[in-house]
Image (cartoon, rainbow, N blue to C red; front, side, top):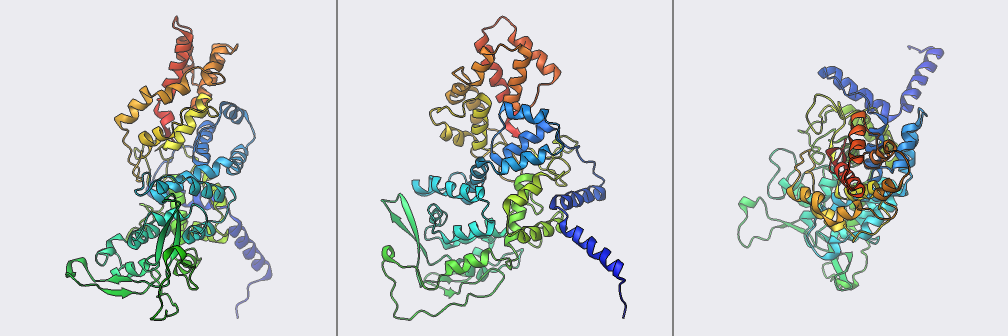
Length: 518
C-alpha cells in the first residue's frame, strides 16, 4: 500500500487549511482575472478613494457621504481604511433601510396593483430593515416572509389574492432564480419544466386566503386544510366545461408532498375564524425553500446579490438560472454558494467580501462601452434609485434633517423606474423637467438656516476652500484644477452672491456624475 510521508501529509493538510481559509474576495478576483487572461481583456485600474467612498456609500447605505466624512476619508493614510469604512457602513442603521428599499422593489415592483394597504408597505420595510441590521441569516428571514405571520409580511401574499399561479411565478423567480411562467399554459418549450411541475408548485399556495381586517387596511393570511389546483391540460386542448383534475402539491424538481388525508365529511370553518391547520403546506414549502438541500435557493441568492453590487449576474438575467443559460464563471458561482451556506447564510459577510474584492473596486473607465461589462473588467454604471436620489440630494444640500413638504412621492413618480434591470437606461423628459423646475429641488437648494448654500455664503474661508466644500458636499471629491478655477471665477463675478451659489449647487446636482453610481 502506498503511504504518504508524514512531513508531506502535514504539508498537504496545511495547504488545504490555507485554501479553506482563503477569503471569498481572493477567489472572486482570481476567477475574474483568469477570465480576462483567456479573453485577452485589459481591465480598468482600481478606482481612487473618492470613487470608492461614494460607490460603497450608495450601494450599502443608499446615500452619498457628508462632506466632512469625505474629507476625513480622503485625508486618511491608513492602508486598511477601505475595510474600516465597509465595516462602519455595514453597522450603520441606514444599511438596513437601504437594503429594505432594494428588496421592497424586488418583492412588489415599484407600483403594485391592489389596495392602498399593499401600495403602502411601511411595516414590511421596517421589518426588512430590522432583519438586515440585525444580520438575521438570509434563510431565516425568507422563511419568515413565506410564513407571513409577522406584521407586514402578509402583504407579499396579499398581492396574489386568489391567484396561486401568480404567487408561484413570483416566488420561483425571486427565490429560486427560475422562470416557470411558460409552463403555466403548456410544457416549457426550452426547459424540462412541465405544466404539472408548475401546478404542483401552485398547490402550496392554493389554500392560502387573504382576510381583510380593519376595513381593508390590514390583512391576515389564513390557510385552509382542503383545496387543490385543477389541471385541465394544455391551453390549446382545453374544452368548455372541462374542470380538470386535482394536482398534488409537489416541490420543484423534487417529490410530491406527503400529507395526511382529510376526512371526506370535513367542512372548513369561516375564513375569519379559521385556525392554523395541524398540517400546513405553507410551512412545508417554507422549510423546503430555504433548505441547504434545495439546489436552487442559495445559488439564486448569491447570483442576485452579486448582480446588485457588480451590475449583472454571473448568470444573467438573474432570474433565469436554467440549464441553457450558463454562468459566465461557473466555479465562482459554486464557490460563493458554498461559502454562503457554510456561513449559515450570513448576508453581511457575503456583502463584505463582494465590496472588498478588487473586482468591485475597479474604475468605471475603459474602452468597454457596455453599462454592465460582461467580463467585469470595469465597474458597472447604474442610475441612482428614487430613494437614493432624494437621500443624496438632502445630504448634498445639508437639508437631511429639514422637512420639505414630503417630496418622496414626487421622487418616486419621476425616478421610480430608471432601469429595466438588465442595464438599459433612458432618462425621461419628466425627470429632466423635475430636476430643472421642481419646487422640491429648489427648496433644498435655496439658502436657509444650516444648509449648504448658507454655509458657503457665510463662511469666512477663501473661495478656494468654499469650492472644495461644494464639490465634497455634492460629488464626494475634491475639484480638479480647471473645475476649481472656473467655479472661483464664477463666484467672484459681479452677480448676486446668493443666486450664484444656488446656481452652482444646482449645476452639480444636475451632472451625470451625480445622477449615476459608477
